[in-house]
Image (cartoon, rainbow, N blue to C red; front, side, top):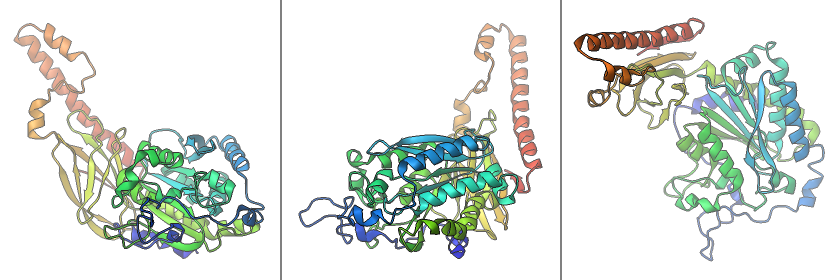
Amino acid sequence: MELLFSSLLLFLLGPIASIARGGDRIPNPSGFWDRSGEFSARSLLQDHKPQELEALADGYMSNSELEKAIEEFGKRCAHISRVYSIGKSVKGFPLLVIEISDKPGKDEAEPAFKFIGNVHGDEPVGRELLILLANWLCNNYMKDSLATLIIKNVHLHILPTMNPDGFALRRRGNANNVDLNRDFPDQFFPINDVVDLRQPETRAVMSWIKGQHFTASASLHGGALVANYPWDGSGDSRYPIYGGMQDWNYIHGGCLELTLEISDDKWPKADELPILFEYNRMSMLNLVASLAKTGIHGRIFSSHNGHPLPASVMIKGIDYKINASGSSGDYHRILAPSGSYEVTVSMPGYRAKTTPTFLQQYAISLDFILDPDGDDAHRRTPLDGCDCNCLGILRRAHGGVYLAVFVILLFLYFLLKRKAVFRFLKRRHSSSHRRVSVV
């Protein structure tokens, strides 16, 4: 089982189409329309009768018990966590998230990872394992090196259940009997773009992804042993999943998501759950830790005023870009180790920069300082970004002497500002084991 997760980094270089399990629940998996001509890809056939599964759920947490477990975790581990809601299900159950970090809720230049469980209501193993994972991290912070590395260097977000209503009904779909993993907008399936058909759980997750700056993600499913990654669909309809969460996540959230089926049995006996957790614990931890231990990380600043920039980052040979965050200018790119890469950073109004780099077994820091391009430099005034009332001073200045003094002071201001950026980068990297470059 651990080999399943430990081999995942081999897939992270770029999107490759693969066949995903679970498509058999779609009424007509070979096409988009049923015989009557009505759209039916999101709707489901009748699942097994709930009473047949009730005995299988014995020993699993109910939704109210799960909510209580999350709230108790938040109180017990408040020093490294916060609990927040991203919305509600059809039946009004809160979709609660646990964030785990040494500075939860703070905006830091660190990668963020998310786990999502129970996307399908009749696949409950993920929700149980994610609560066990959160408690293990809390119990082992400052005791175990891997737990400490994750908490200090990654913002981990855990949504134990995306489909609490489906779990309560013991069926795959939500309360409206819609498969949430077929409900996202799809690049090859435009009918999924109809906003009015979107389920509240799907809308909540989409808003969550847009609001956070996730680097990578994993959703936990059950009923097979599969690791699936973008792309789910294709233009010629050869593959079974359209409207899946991971493709939308990758395209619109800049986040590489893996869909992981981690148990052959959808409803293993409850006393087997701790065993399943131990089988998967190190793999789940290493998957999160890989964000900090490998890849290219950095921040992007403007030479004009020292402000962080939400610039785009492209790797030559990979036809996909990620964006730095708007608040901190930080970016995090997952790449296969032991390889040479050409990194290009660009943003409208600034001159792009490109630099080659070699990624070994450990992460490297690669920071960029972008200069305004020629046209934009003429449009900009040296007053942009000045915290003082520079325009008022200029208007009140009389004579060449005052103007000359003002220009000199302004030049010194921006010179110090730029030096401050370099001093910041030097301080930031002085305590890091990463190889550092500033471009």
